[in-house]
Image (cartoon, one colour):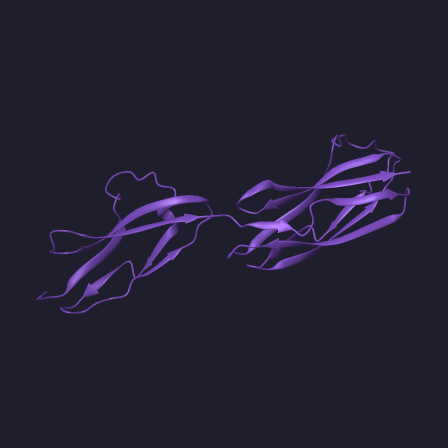
Length: 195
């Protein structure tokens, strides 16, 4: 039993020595310090906001002035990125005519419990050349929307417009980037032949 008020402080167990943990700074405690009267308790809220993926095992301590040992609190877990997929395996426009608009609609599904902030872009195989100044810079592929957020267990309708400017076979990919996770996490094949 405590006979008089005691001050408490919550801190990371490695604060005394240099801490190289990537996750420790992602935790916030409220309150982080205070005064406890005898037989009093306090609820300490732990907030965790992380932009890193991976496993963590962090030990924090609550020190009570006048007590020989701090009270440890170990937090373990794993931060995972979103799980997602399209509702088709390939975008096949088939045979198309030069200059005519072709449109396909499909869905991007977020099958995880966290929102997914995404970016979509088309990369044509071998299409890394810059057009000449007199060439039309109009894109052949247009993705709508190019950026957005899919809510947990939600889906986003995607529209891909394609208007061929050349007579050739097209081999391309619709690439998915996920903010704070990575680029080109999924590539959906695109094919077409322009006559």
